[in-house]
Length: 360
Image (tube, rainbow, N blue to C red):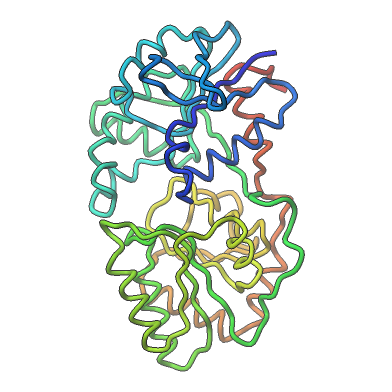
């Protein structure tokens, strides 16, 4: 039985972060470890041992065997892990990497400076792997564009469809039809995510006596999110019904999905957009820009698309929905959980693409 060595080096250091990258890593680990067709082994990089070691017991994994595979969902600069490149050359199986997005390249003005500095190394290091997988068609197109514009390594690969099922089955009960609707925003607090525009739109509606609660789930970007956090605090101090939870885990996410009448995601750029499909999995309608994760679902699936996430457009769409409570119920009734992607399908796609299983 072949072994898949799954890199969790960055995840081991960032377990408390509820970032999209960490959620992908956790979800893939869960689905892959349940497979009865491969041996699944979590590994971390050890500079001391000049190679990867078992994440559970620290034992060296050596060079692997023919038919094995190594995969990392955590793009990293290989040169920052001393001896890593030579280990990868010695590894006898296939190697693969997951590419999430080119946001540090296209939106450096709102991206962590460290990520902007590292991106050229991350991107060029894609050439070191046998297989590159992309979280969406859009992410693959952006990678192709970066390669053309910069002359960096040309890269291509398959799409790894991520899953929506962060919890088993639909939530048991939805409490979303109370007198005061709850609007939910999920994601790191930063300008790319559009929370500043959402706050402006909400304030304009509150000023016109619309009744609703606005809830934010996500940590604060220390470089590009402090002013948004301050505005949330200022609105709360003025008595506006706004809540921010910075460290919400899956249990809290499920709780707010149960309560919310609508998830609002006015982001300007995403590689995939897990919060959108996870909301639909929980039975919660979505108002969002055209996330790659929604591209194959379209309207009429519990989704309403914001073509341009300006304050005016967000305000206008929310006014329509809040003025007609039946519209939110209708959107909810249109959600088709069977049409949403699953993590077990992502896991099977991954192992087949790495050659661990024959394609069916």
